[in-house]
Image (tube, rainbow, N blue to C red; front, side, top):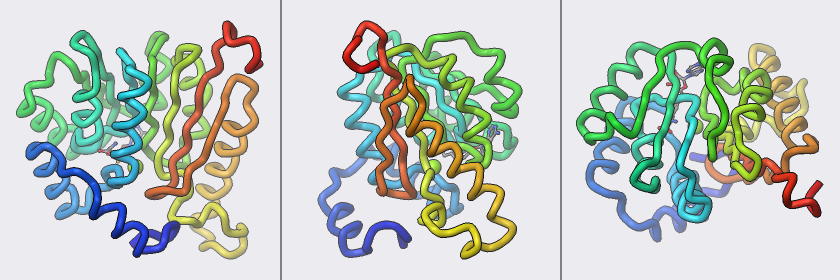
Length: 223
Ligand code: SAH
Ligand code: MG
């Protein structure tokens, strides 16, 4: 059940989705059984659309889980395309390695193990696309790294930014223990919406997804 979009709309959209490749379907089934928070079908189709259009060669993903979104994105890369994906949770790392190997994608997807906070400063520009899908409370601290690592003309996509709709509620209407995330995520959304280098659109699909285009100075009208 989504807190953001009415169920009848989601059911309709879900019904008209084309079937995924059987390997992708198996991963979806596994993730749903184990309650692993992979991207929603709406975000899946949005990623497929954006990747087809944007044609990135290099992708950075923060938050691998079992490798579902990485494996999905790899299907839209050109031959020499590469994905670097980061996760810190040993259980997920083990599953992701297994799935990437099984999909014969070892030469395409590189899994970096550890906290993104430590790994991001060690990475070198540029990436054509960054997919941010990790701990929501940290998006704000990841943002300067994402901006440094993303090429002008690149795309930053952040998942789960509406936090089950909670982000739109007043601070006092949400449980105390979630207020820090609420505050940090709001500040992230504010920053990406007002950053002079970014053109951002926040979509209320899935659990909320933010799309930010890093303006290219060549495109002088945009600055
Ligand atoms: N992108 C995946 C789902 C990712 S779920 C998919 O759609 O298939 C979020 C993942 O982010 C979890 O596996 C969690 O371990 C990882 N994560 C959260 N915070 C992190 C951090 N600071 N550094 C590295 N990994 C992190
Ligand atoms: Mg997500």
